[in-house]
Image (cartoon, rainbow, N blue to C red):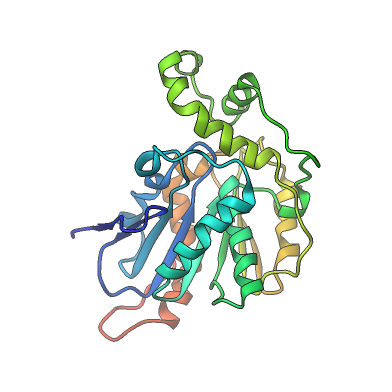
Length: 267
């Protein structure tokens, strides 16, 4: 089956296998990654799902744009493009830093009275209120960034010590890691959509307690799920993750099913 890729909106890469879309899944990547990390998902998820992968500035098709270090500017830059792209019921998925960006976008939606998400997958990230960034934003040193990267991904030292590679990726890494390090929660009402929090069984980067606290950010159903893998289980255990995502999306897909499309069953 052919896959359609739409890049009309610079901040969203759209992947679909059919024009009969029952649900749009907006996907927010983890720090240091890009929209194309979600490209393989379209092969594994039900046909009626369109993947809209968020592309932050300073990478891939936005490589010539300066990286952004402030959460408010990231959210402001994404909100209009996301709103204009909504053509069906939708859900959000965000991993690590991406879960906080997804949460902030949904809070902006709520303040503006926009359509609500069917579901938020908060994957591998701490609950917003557990993030206590400094009053004055701090600038991370190169060594702090690389130490964090090693602890998260186990990236080999020879790769991180290559000056050509560092020159290419360091601006993006610095922006993303400072977004996370400086994030400060502002108290707001809970979201009016269910939240599924997902944790890697071997994650030593994000605490178990900080992830269970996502329950305080919804006034709908809350579910806590564990999949195999460490902090980057989104990459290392993608089949287990996508199976779990399909299970949670199946009732939504079937609720919005259109004539001629089969029902989807959880796996």
